[in-house]
Length: 154
Image (tube, rainbow, N blue to C red; front, side, top):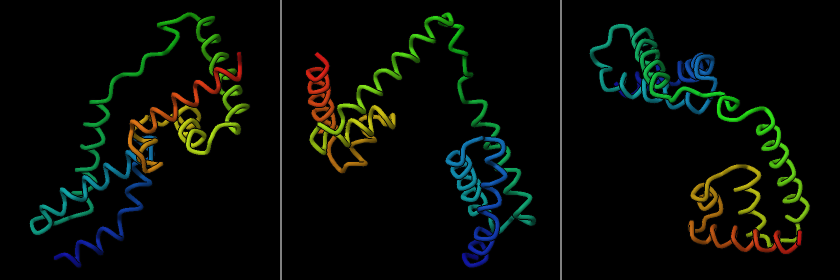
C-alpha cells in the first residue's frame, strides 16, 4: 500500500501543483492544497477506485473552500483619495532609500534584522527564525538600528 501510494504521489504531485497554481496564483498555497488533498487520499487509499480523479475532486473542493474563506480585497482608493496613495508610496520609497544609504553603517546583526524586517517585509518572528535568535533580540536590534538611522539623519 505505502509503495503504491508513494508511486502515485511521485507521479502526480508536481503536475497537480502546476495546475493548482493557475487557480491560486501562489505556489505556496498550491503546494499546501495539494499536500492536504494527498493526505486525505492517503487516508482513504484502500477504498478509492480512481485515485487521480478523486484527488482532483478533493483538491478542487479544498481550493474553493480556501478561496471562500479569504477576505475580499478592498481597493486602497476606497479608503484614501489618490493624493494620499501617492504620498504613501513616495514616503515608502524615501524611507527605503534612506535605509539603504545607512544600512552599511550598522553592525552586522542590526543590518540583517533591519534588511529582513523593513526591506523584505518579514515579521519579527520570521526574522527571529531566519537569524536563529529570539524575537526580543530582533526587537532590540531593530530599536538600536532605528536609533542609529535617526541619529544619522538629524
